[in-house]
Amino acid sequence: MSSPPTTPAPASAPAPAASPDASDIAAAALRRQQQTPQISTAAQLAKEHDARQEFRRLIDPGIMRPNTKEAAIESLKILKTLGENILRDPQNPKFLQFKPTNSTIKRVLMERPGALEYAIRLGFRPEVDNFQPYYGFNPRKIGDLRTGVSIINEVLDLDNQKQQRTTVTKQQEKAAKDAAKQQVKLAFMDDRQSVDQRVAKERFARDRGDVAFPPPPAAQAPVRKMPGQGQSLSGNLVPPTGDMEEDDDSAESDI
Image 1 (cartoon, rainbow, N blue to C red):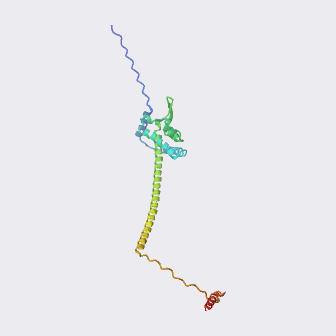
Image 2 (image 1 turned 90 degrees about the vertical axis):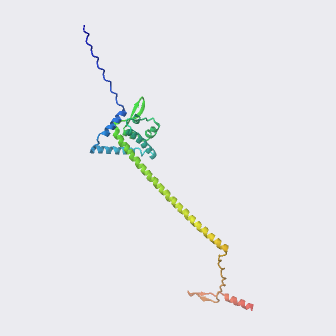
Image 3 (image 1 turned 180 degrees about the vertical axis):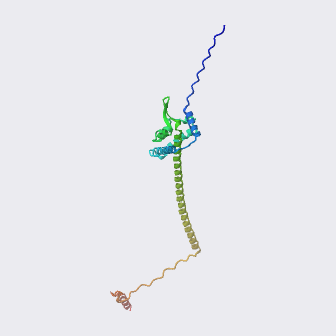
């Protein structure tokens, strides 16, 4: 008696593929952009130009105007770090998000006007995971991220050049003032040295008796007025002084 035919066991269904996470998507998008030849058309160039102009406006006046310069520069440096971390290591999940509750992020991005708007334009979007809010990066915005980071570097480079020029100018002004003070000091010391040398020479000559004292002034004879009247150059008569008569009287009394 033959055994009944065996029924083949049904094939097991393939396991569902694991859905890629955000880091895999970002890495794939970055690799695709790097491998795809970049052929820019006129429309693409115009789009890139508009994007760069938009990022510039988000910085100035968006960030620069409502904040102090120091605060705005600090916010731009944090935004630059967030973007460059993704461009450098797009597969690292910790670079693809930031928490608004972080003390530095809260102070530099969340509480300063314009900073969060720039982060959103770079490609970060608000999300919630286990009731915890965070901002995650959208891998499809990798092109905007690269453009936004380049504009930040452009602004920071210009600011650094301006600071260097200001520093050089201040150093030159300080050097000029110090040189002027030194010249005044040297001139004063030269004058004082000349005076000291002259005083020493006079003291030495006096001690040797070589000093010639000026002669005393000669005695002047008394001025006598002529007797009688005269006439001035203008024709006026000058009355007699009488001095000579007094002298004659005194002479007669002496006789």
